[in-house]
Length: 125
Image 1 (cartoon, rainbow, N blue to C red):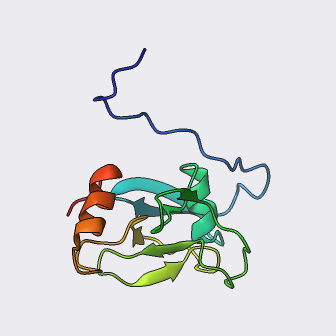
Image 2 (cartoon, rainbow, N blue to C red; image 1 turned 90 degrees about the vertical axis):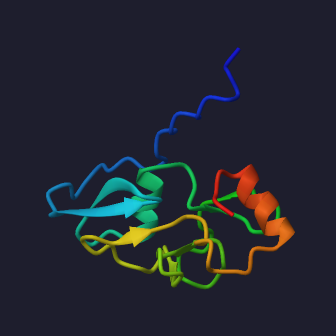
Image 3 (cartoon, rainbow, N blue to C red; image 1 turned 30 degrees about the vertical axis):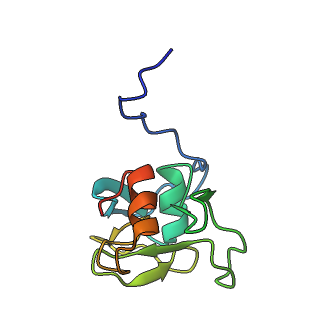
């Protein structure tokens, strides 16, 4: 049995690149962790190559991984550290980009339910 107090190791990404691996490498940060993508990749591709979700739903904490892949739904929103929202499915990765899969603390007023959600998912109130 595993110790529930220890951090869960990252799970492997869902996407495995099979072709076009000769494009220039770009460096970005996802939730403060270094990551890479290739020139021409969308942020959704980078996120799913480095993990198994894009973000957690604000309404129950379930993992989200994009749905429509064309910017029409609400499943792939991520944030910059400054609080700007980006659609991961239609935002090209830029070198040095920083994204958060949970909204930054200053994004919404810290209500009791937001504090509880952040506590459940490892965020900061």
